[in-house]
Image (cartoon, rainbow, N blue to C red; front, side, top):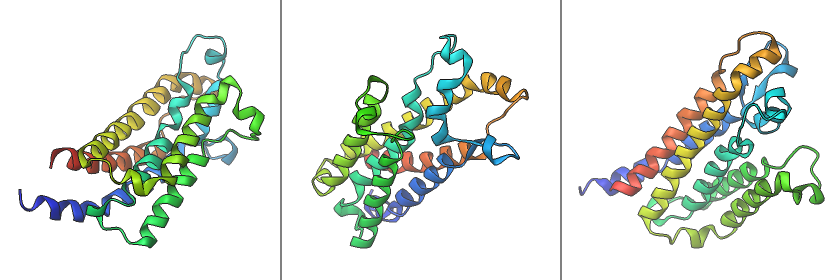
Length: 211
């Protein structure tokens, strides 16, 4: 048991690495294609699925905003951990974590957004998620005062949801995406890389909860 704090200090580098890997996978192809214009990334799916015929006619029910959960998970996790004393991050790493948290949050903005668009019912939940993530980054020194097990539980829950819901949504939509492409589609490497990264984030949360 006495070795656990040392293990956590060593795992502190797993958090930024795992979060970065998750973002790389999220912004990479989930649907691959030789033509760049037909490549679909994890980020694209939140808008892309709206135009599937089965979604438009109500035959396929998807929680569209669920595709943005990886961004929420990485943003909040970085903000919650940037100033935690036991992790011992210096200012350069803290700044990088908070910058990454902000970038992840702002990527939830819809294409060609305007302030008026963000207040429409379709995008209200995304807007709330962006505001919450940026607000957490702004108060990250105070968020670091949360109990370790609570922070770990939030991290573990966020990572789990960010794996399950987007991947489940994507797999449910994949047959309809295949019809659009007139060819059977399989998940491209980006999805798997994102899952690997989020599993690493979940490990950090699990250590915080159980140690």
